[in-house]
Image 1 (spheres, rainbow, N blue to C red):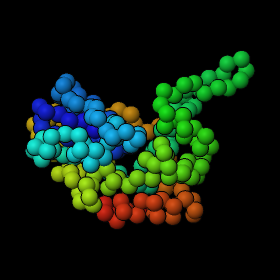
Image 2 (spheres, helix red, strand yellow; image 1 turned 45 degrees about the vertical axis):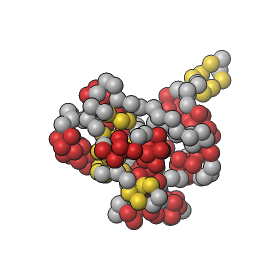
Image 3 (cartoon, rainbow, N blue to C red; image 1 turned 180 degrees about the horizontal axis):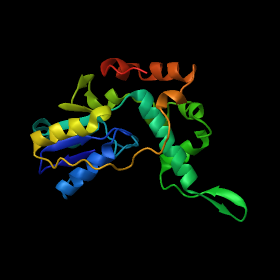
Image 4 (tube, rainbow, N blue to C red; image 1 turned 30 degrees about the vertical axis):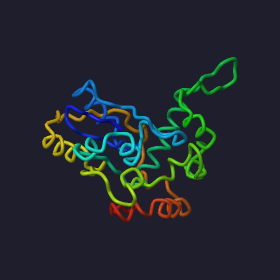
Length: 217
């Protein structure tokens, strides 16, 4: 998440939706932007707060008066992008030392916990819905709703991010050049990664997102 007092905006950062590009731009536009909030213990999320977390942590007048927005992405594409990111990081950060392959310190508890599940995409999708792994089961709506009601003013689409963001940026008086950072390292259509067993799994897990945002396979 990021809060810019200069532009009176709250950005809800959902993983693998191009959020790092937006954060980069907002940080350049407002060097005093807020990126950390006191989230309740045990929630295991800071950068990717729910809008409900932000609502609890800031003054009511600030929350009501600032423009709140987020980016969403097709759940099928988003999960494969997530897997690709972890898989690439594990390969890129592994070393051969004394003839024995070892994985270098990833500097992130989630990445370390996910590492045993990266043999293939189906294994990644089998991550249990508990602890640090719960984030792989949250619907994007979980990040955007308070008591079941949508609590953001604008929802941008990853699939049309440049145009969507530039339109919003014009309204907010933000710079309109959206940089591309932290892109997925992959070379195939996400549809090719799914099987007859994994496609229904995603359809069930993210049924709310697929219905609400009208995404299909």
